[in-house]
Image 1 (cartoon, helix red, strand yellow):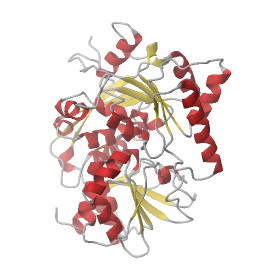
Image 2 (cartoon, rainbow, N blue to C red):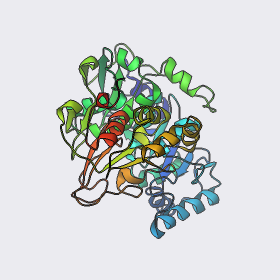
Image 3 (tube, one colour):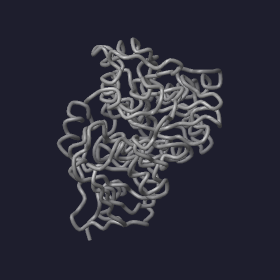
Image 4 (tube, helix red, strand yellow):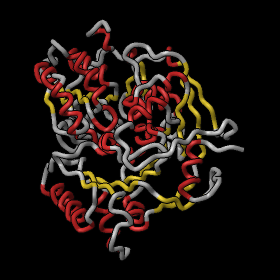
Length: 422
């Protein structure tokens, strides 16, 4: 019996020829990642276990991105702790405000993760890097501490569900819609501790930004990781970025899957996850008259340049509806600069939107767009749990950038075709 792509990566990093679902392995990590919420806890545990030096100063990466630029004294202290640890350990990649970005957009952009890597991060959306053909998963801060010290982590090899997406996507439908549709179909625990392998002709045609979005939200279906077999689109993205080499893995034809699910993407409209679950999904045409107070375009899910271009195309020459806030957050400084060069930021500002420096900010109710009592937001973020973006009585709808931009103009959730023809 052959192995899936996930199993091959885990076997290679465990130093064995073969692994099977359910096995417990010790695996070498290529990247250990922490942010300003999780790293301080890991640093504390690192000291408590008696560790003095990180296993590899090039492979431990710290990114202050959640409550930064520092929103209050507590967040400033968290970041100070990180910075002092990075200086003490002489970390190569401590990515400070002004040179940073939202971690899961920043690391691929910088070439710090790549095909065949094993990446762990003390953030649940670490699974984003599976878009490159890496095994990437979120862990707790104590596990991060152990990995920072020892360079390895124990894992249970997950079963794999293979998702096959057939057909051609409709206009305004992209990776966000495919993953929302999938989560709606299988539920928030439909892939619990399983690898979600994304394949099919629709996936082969999907650009990298859409792949990052899908892998990012694998955790919202309970997945241990999301992963795409690397192809020419992957290679084109990493060309000139990756400095330390990579390995391209493909699953075997006789690999064993826990389940195989197929979807016809031609039947999928732009999708919206309604409060208060990423699985509470409807087609945007099914929602009528849902008024909004705020639209957020950004996050590790949809703050990439492609996302901003789509939003700007919708917003160009138009105005945000009265009494609606539009907040646009480029995911990295490089994306910010390119959006500036292309005139996208000017479009957002002229439309009546506010543009922020890179930050997770409103996604987790941190800052830069926290919701008040009863307020409604449409966002390109990844979670819409009760109180996720602010007050417990607020409501968050999840959608792609085109839907979010069109809704900001109309003041209610609408299909992009109500604003532009194509």
